[in-house]
Length: 132
Image 1 (cartoon, rainbow, N blue to C red):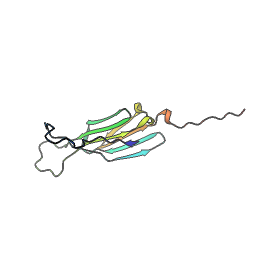
Image 2: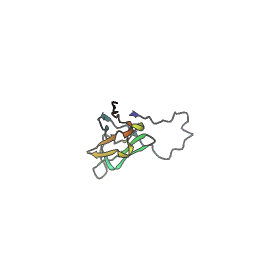
Image 3: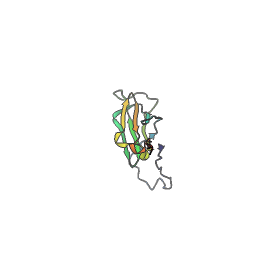
Image 4: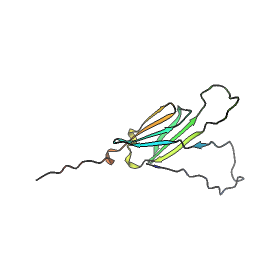
């Protein structure tokens, strides 16, 4: 599984060419750990401040996308804040080796766990040898 990069504007346009209607959202890539098991891959991503309602995980054209919006859990307006929560965005190329229909996702305490099972067609199989 390879990380898929997202194209960034090359900066060839001047600031007068673009109309600015609102501030752009800032996205950071969440840190991830990827483990290989006999059944497939396990991806663990740290998403602090993210709830299930603000998390989107989808696979499209062999690209796994994790997109999330973090929010402070404390009600009310902050009087003093030393850090801002960022939105998260990261993509991975999964290829045809992952069975995208059987991917499972679990979010617990700001940690996303994805179970990415290997497709049956990609699993190695034992070939039976017959003696004649």
